Length: 417
Image (tube, rainbow, N blue to C red; front, side, top):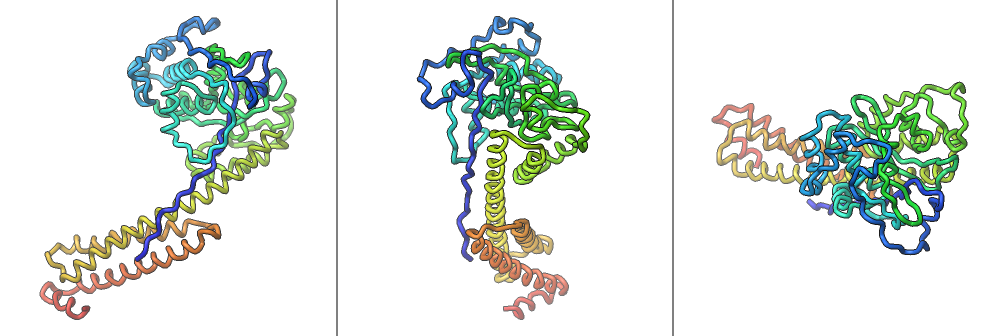
């Protein structure tokens, strides 16, 4: 029986790059131009209370600022240290926000670069902890990972911003987290500081900590309306213009039900439903239209990835089933010597049967197969049927074998040779 090598898809993941709030002397677009002069990197953040001129440090903040260097090399060790001193979700969320916003330096000089590889979140997080710099993606990824490690439900939100009545030209990422049963918004990137004259200025603040959705909607607009956490989501036009009519009759959007379903869906289902919600949320600007096209592209990638995952899983199960039934055949050829009890003999056929059934289910779960994989899929189906038929024949043999008295069972091997 021939086996195909596993097919792996290298997904096209486009890194969405976003900027911090900016000083008046420099626009967001200017900071990202490829012809920007290369200037010295901004200085590291100094963790002192001087960076909180309008807010007093709380006990969770002091815990975050006292994390020893030995505990800063992984998400698990960071959160474990905090949990030694903090007990409530409120305290942990505050400490995590403080640590991320004060320990990650905004990388002013990073530019938009498409990535033709799957992002390994664990490796990316280790890189962030090692380099201590990044843009909104890195702030958000680390913040969400730490929240989840602390047992707090959290989601990454992709969207765009309006500041001082003007739409910023680049997309952005922030977080939603459920703290003590209620959903709040967190933007550790904007909570870290700002960019001015091509330099990152550390200015830790809590203006973007634990915000209600309606409050953050003044400046942050999710691409997916579900993440507005509103029964009457704002349309893109309403956010862009800052004018909307709450009395305008609109169907109720049950975002809680949608969010619960979202948590149970696979990537393809999440992307498909998000696209549907975005398409029904009014006319979008250039960033919205770009995101719609990107989502469509990611859906195509996810569809292919789903096919290849099912194919590889089915191939592995097929190989295990074939190996298992071959062991039974060898044992049968020896007339069941050395002797085993009936249950163990039956298991030698039941296990391969279970695996081949799962392999068949994997293949049948594929709704649409791209033309370039159709031939391989057909051949795999034939191999599954071949092994399934072999298993069934030996299963029938065992039924007959177990019906016979102990003294007559040896004769059955002579009859079936």
